[in-house]
Length: 162
Image (cartoon, rainbow, N blue to C red; front, side, top):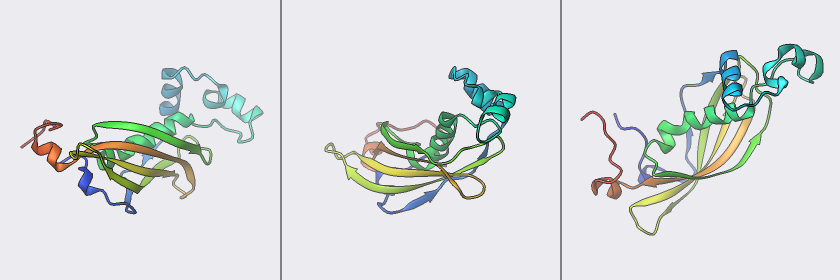
């Protein structure tokens, strides 16, 4: 089974729903906080969050939500990527809490063949929603993706079955 898409497989205006969703657990949030050294009590101290924050419960670290949203897109967007060139305009649109499930969809905004002709840049916007359909995160990025010509030259060929 192929993993990822070639440049020719993207069409400006198309929307791709990524699957499956991901439910964020307390362990996910705690470990991510520890790994990234983000020890703000808003994320890891339920007592603090209950007493001193507007939400009354811990918030999931925003960069964890971002990492999950990017990860959910890999199979459909950057599975064959040569490089992720740029992330831009990342907005945290609503809070995410332990137990929320994140779903993502990406809209291809533009495709542009690179000067070499064997690869192209895909510009897209990804929107992450929770289980209630509320937008929680939005970002745009540019990904350098090989064309089928690139693959036939033997470059970027991924190992795998078959």
